[in-house]
Length: 389
Image (tube, rainbow, N blue to C red):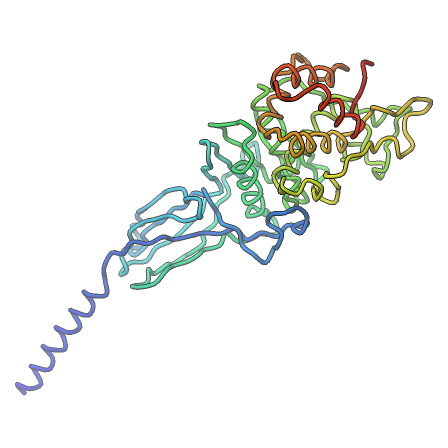
């Protein structure tokens, strides 16, 4: 009997020591990634493979102790670093829930948010671990913000975060809002940017990294231009300028006929997307979706255009994109400096015919190393030397 009691006591002590040794607080780097599923992943130089999850840098993570299910306790609420990780201490004897909120803190104190709708919408979130038990050794994660075929938030956050962080266009301390709803309720794939509201992304746009970046470009330039009353005008319904090479869908496209102000404004957004997803070290290898943004050339002179009118110097937004790409890669203007040209232009209202001339004067007067010959040469190469009309 004594031997039996001694065995029980010793076993109990060993169990206590073993349990005490295993239950302790550990310091972790817990990392997160986005599951990306872009329809045009292969285009451009970054995020080219949907099979590769991308670092969720800057995203907001919440760690909750749910060991006592009736008394959940938030132990950490923080943004990830630029490896997509959060450093924290967790008790290996406890159970945690990990939730990601679709907002991110980026360089230059810029933030991005993904919400379900502009009016009455909610912040997107995803629980990436319902019951996480910290291991007593080794690493944990990465946990993945998974792709959802309805909302596609992982795509939006990945493309927006990459764009705004890599190419802030001179903007700091700004929040960009993305709404996973179409711009036009009758057009599920429609997308647009609205001043002082944000980017409205239809389903097709949320699958397209260039589309997300295009609307981002509008938002950043709009922020720097202080919500100027820009174009909102296209010439596509003018009987002299019908829709060209556009499936008769009368809104703007890379090669659609537009008023100057429209082509110049949309051309910047296309250029922004080009600069976000292409490596400027290879200037001739530039893709904006399926469009070639690295080859100079005036598109409008190659297709039927305005009846009884000379089409020379009437560049479309794709021509403006290629022109800005040339300034970016050949003249080596930064994206922020190209945005400066727009910001500094003395244009009270961007529906006016003089927009190109205003930009030209702004560029040559404010950027001393950009000569008139450089501007004129690349403008002529790309068919955007609009003239004085």
